[in-house]
Length: 463
Image 1: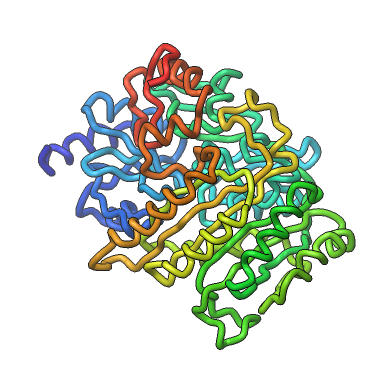
Image 2: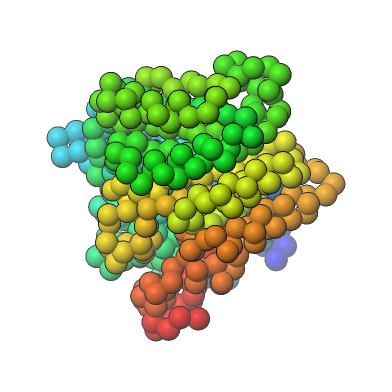
């Protein structure tokens, strides 16, 4: 299709579109096609920056009329760049920014273009929050539809456990309020069933101060610390969440300068409850081994929500894979040490979550995420500068580590799927895939929304 034809087609859509349409070469196009992952460099035929749900409808209908593949962009943080497509039409939701907080009912209605920083700002004005992404520039849409891991998961469940409603534009361009069946699929089934334009969440009293911050140990103490965490986590109070990090030490002022760039193990505990009680609960963890830096302190919840931002700067090339682990065994601790010492880039890291508490008490059939038995999630994340002459070595480091973790794993979560393909989808959804394929058949029988960990249409069969 030539640029001239694109102009003609764009003019047809402009006549019924309230937002902004961008074609190659037009002002704003180059910026609009960029996504968070600097390894992604794609050139869509048309970017539809929607002003409302009616624009989403028009964009979907237009794409289908003219056989243009569709990509849907919320925050643009997909590691595989699902929000942009060569030669396709990008439905860009980033301009949909409205949010309404009901402090009495403790609910929020949020448009799909919000980032977690924007959502948290609105909710925290009322001392409220819901489980949300821990990189503040991440969009609420992708995190929510994938399941939603965050610092509140052990106290208030995953993001999907707090999703109470959704407005959706389907593959035929119709606006619907998600019924019980569709809402079940949206709770972890990703963007397979339509474009969600608004989410409704339950909120909970949080903060404004929580107790948290990073603790770092030399890598030679990793086995000891991880053994303690493995024993400590299953019985820890719900108010405590813990993020695991293993990477070269960042140049942070609370760490000794001679440690910068050396391999370290870090934990980021966050206590959302009475601060004095939290200090008592965290004392044994903080007293394990000999930390080289401990920045645990009372901080605003919003500060905690952006504390990991520097681990995922926009424009950095990135690739990851993840595993779900029932335990941090000695063998797993040895692997984590090996992963850090064999990193191919100083910007890479091993990242993980402690799973348990409220997130593990949700019935497996309640959401598409399924069971979340107490345990751990571990992700190998390769980050490197765009333009690296050998990016394959970074991806190879991730894949090799992912393979080595396999014997210690009992599955993976859909929210962190990467390029595992159909095998990864089957591993993530298991016996829920039959219901999901039937739901896909109902709402998107032609697989219009296939740029995602794709659930193919079907009549309940597992492919």
